[in-house]
Structures are given as C-alpha cells and as structure tokens.
Image (cartoon, rainbow, N blue to C red):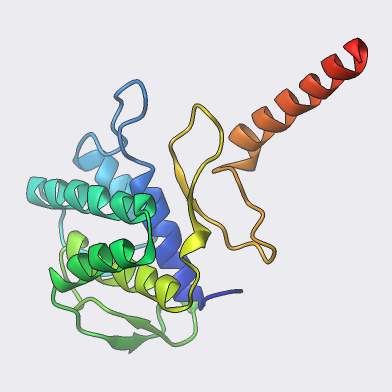
Length: 186
C-alpha cells in the first residue's frame, strides 16, 4: 500500500468519477440522478443526503476539475488545480471508523452534499499524491482509443492501461499479433 486505505479509496472514487465523463460516442456516465445514485452506492459513500439535480450539476463540474488535474502538464499546474478544488469547499477533518475500517480521516462535514464530500476527500487525496512527489502516478490510459484515467498504485509504476481486462488485453493481443506478423515476414 503506497497511501493509506482512505486515500487510496478516495483516489479510486476520483478515477471512477472522471471515467463517467462522456465517452467517444457522447454517452455520459452521469446522465441523471439514477446514475449519480449508482455512483454513490458503488463508491460506498456514507451519510449522503437525498440527491438533487443541483448535486448532479455540481458533481459534473467537479468531474471536469478532477480531469484537469490528470491532464495537468506539471506539478505547479496540478497544485493550482487541486488548491482550487479544495479551497472551494469547507473542509472539516474528523476521525471516523465506519464500515469496518480502522480509524481514518474524512475531510467533509457529516451530512455534507455529495459534491462537497467528493471535493474535500478527493481533493485531499490528490494533494497527498502531489505532496508525496507521486504526481506521475496519475495517468491517462495508453490505449490509443481510450481516454480514461487511472492511478498507478503498482510498486514498480508499470500500469499503463485503465483496465487490464479490456484495454490491457486488447493492446497485448495487438502487440502479440504484430510480433507474429513480423516473425512471419522476418
């Protein structure tokens, strides 16, 4: 484990949020409140009030802000973006031990709207990545037809694809076939 459990969980949530962005076909993974509810359940949010259309709009805007961090060209640019995200919400750090996890820190107020929850915990997780000198772990999938993001938490920093079952498999099969063609024509 490179970061604490709660930081890694928050990073995974940020990745999941960014990857709900419209794909090449224009399909938005947060097309409505039902999709936002699914996102909240999938990422095991606790103590979230009833979701509204305002929550959906704010989460979509936050999604774009998080995406910008992954696309930042350098550390100072990422720092500026992360400070803007965290600075836009009221953070109220407190210890909690819910859902069977040991003590960890939440940065949002209990009962905070979902966008504040995401901005505080996700923004602080990204801040920890930068503070640890690990910004290069925030990546975009290297498959040529994929724009999804990932956090490379591997020990040797070798993760290149968003999902080893889809993009990773496709790229490995393509490389294998290219090697076979080259050997046959070699």
